[in-house]
Image 1 (tube, rainbow, N blue to C red):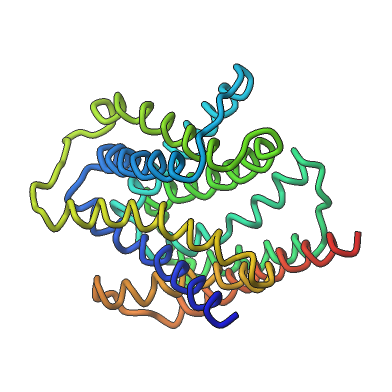
Image 2 (cartoon, one colour):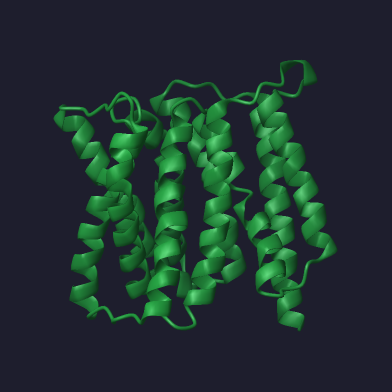
Length: 293
């Protein structure tokens, strides 16, 4: 059990660090090019892993259409808006906004999957909104300034929630390996023309260290960490594992302090507690109610 929690915690550290590493990478690569390159290496790794474990299955026309939309919305737009947002947005604030994705997912599940919307979810949402307000405004109405990058991060959060709903719907017909591989292939192919349409100017680093960071984070964050998480999640309680995943904003804070020399403020800590507390409260109650049913 200790080994399982250790590995799961390491995965959370890797995912939380991605906000800071993404902030570093967008200084040397333009957002769409960075998205396309990362998807290329992710597809490369997923292809090797899928054929090593099991051959991917063929899809019918209906499933291909669904996977296409998943690849466009849940992969390309999700990845691109993440890096476009990090050009100007603070990585810690971005991590806190993305931490509210489970709450939006709950509302979408109530609409599209007919899951029950509870009072606990609404209360958790209010706590999370208060936390976002504290972080974005620094606790003062006079300092309200919505960075353009934060709007792209909100889009990242929305597309991530949509991706979860689409994945849950498609998983009834398509196995996870096939769905993940094909959706990333679609996202990569769609991203190619947008590199020349959206990136002006087009920035690409020639430094070996930047390319090593790009490839390393792509493979580690979206490949190895996901595999490790899926392998050890079966050994622990699901609710406790979900609480671990909510520690990502705090990891982003610490990594921002270490790598970007960004100080951690009292308002950020207070906002983080409201956001993470609201998410944990709403998702925990939803799971408890599901068990009762």
